[in-house]
Image (cartoon, rainbow, N blue to C red; front, side, top):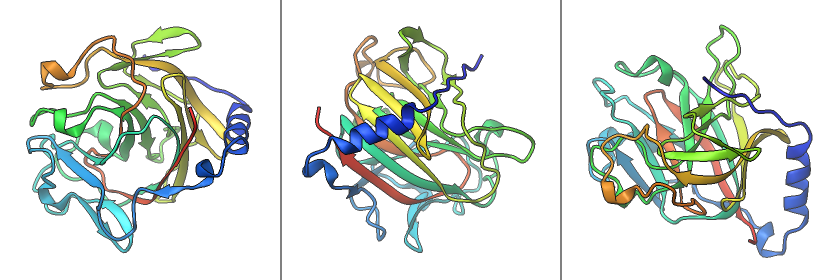
Length: 261
């Protein structure tokens, strides 16, 4: 079961409120990706130690942060994540992404034109070498396949649960009411994060989904170190990580604006 959540003017109002009530510090966007190299980012790919960028999966090409599999023979469940080096708690995140090319051989059907950004993630150095996904909240990026709706901006919850409208949701992926992008066009997504009080995925001022009170719990994470998973722990902050799930993707901007508590 996949649960759909929609709002109307919430996104516009939320962004106006957030951006209109900022001090000088909050008016400053920080570029997490410098357009030249992966300075400040740490790769973690399933089957390899934290810091090893197998197959040069994550790279910069023509000023774009690129996830590529041209050095892979097969994907073989080498799920990867590229973590920014420091955690955040209260912020507005802006990401511009596009899917390109063809899925690498051996990628799952569900991973076709599928990627995302992990929020409130565990520290990459606490992940087991064979662990596939970090404990985190995923703002999912999906590309259309030309055969009907396939909305982007959904929420997936590896090793976590959230509340929506006061109800605990334990479903792994929760559909948003959002656009479908079938081609290789650039998509801009804003994600507003207020600790554990409110998280919203936004495109063009429209809120696709919002949720509250994320906690550690559930599964959909394999080969995790037992000491790293404390069920029931509130997720008020954590790392940001970009995914590699077998389909090439590029990022043009990864920007953050830190907000007051």
